Length: 471
Image (cartoon, rainbow, N blue to C red; front, side, top):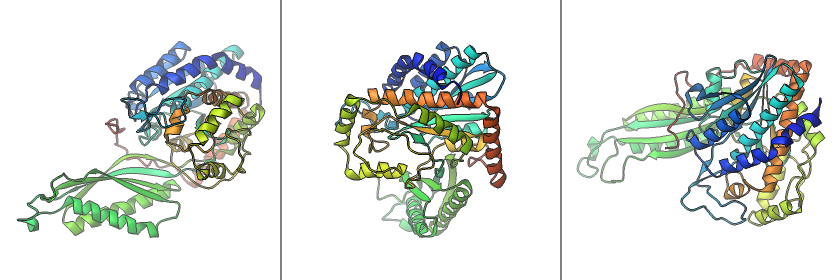
């Protein structure tokens, strides 16, 4: 609400450098907790722009924090930069063309996410210095959002304790406020131990850990009828015991991903899955040990911050896409199904049109179909008042976690969308810094929600971040 044009100019001053920065991170896709080069790029940008940098926060080598300003409220702007396996793809081509020798790719747009967040933080830093006002802006470089849940560990360990408000964004097909709903999630490994024997000569002497895993999976599949309809349970074999069918397998491990609408429901459902594992061990005379790998809470809403961020988006209008941007988006859309395109509109609660790129701002409060994933921003939203934007950076209908997403990660449209949302985030940070009443309303709303449902970390207190999970 205050000085929007001034903060936008600060964003524009750095736009070229940060689009080049985003492209460099796109070129070095790295998986959960292995983002060594990407983190180094972020640290270098923070230092180049005068932030006070702390590396390796919370025991995570690829996490960092940069701070600028003195006194006043502390505004956190959150960035990510991890990639996904199996989504290597050449940039700027509308056909599936993996890059030689690579497996990973930025199929969720986190190269843009980190660069756009740091661009917003840099603009706020410059604005604070020019205005001579009290207040601090922090950029938190958060690794391993794709299942590693770095932010959940950071919240559990108090990294955000002195933060007053947090702002972030995610690439999307439309410009909007991220509807504050997501699934709480827990990632758990179940390892069964049995007894090996000759499967033909002495099967009666064996106790099969592989049988136990299979019985557990059957039990969980029957559980699906008796759990909330918005809950999800997925599993994958990490160790099936070996490749010799004539051996009774003495060890096997299965990884379960349990999701539920909120934190209390998650903890209840995860406990039920655990009891099924114990039952499978009992039936097979094996033993089972479980280990939580990571977890994330559901998102908490914060209407005062959502209204402030939406007001900035409305003042900006949609990103300035041009005919060339739309032409390439149409080529991407030719690789999609009609269902992909219709689903994207329904998810955001907007009418289906033929526009290949976003040409409007989604109304605040638009309700779409609930097709929810999970994010570790959820835990930050329990720790401090938090708001997220969706920035329009790719063709409408593009599936998340797809080669089409990777292909669009360096396009002019992606750059325009990133700069656009950086302006909105920076403008919202300025609103919070200039308007004590806005911050007070945001904190009061947050406190009232916590009074109804206090936060309990979904992580065990002694669990360390799974730094080797990408290995």
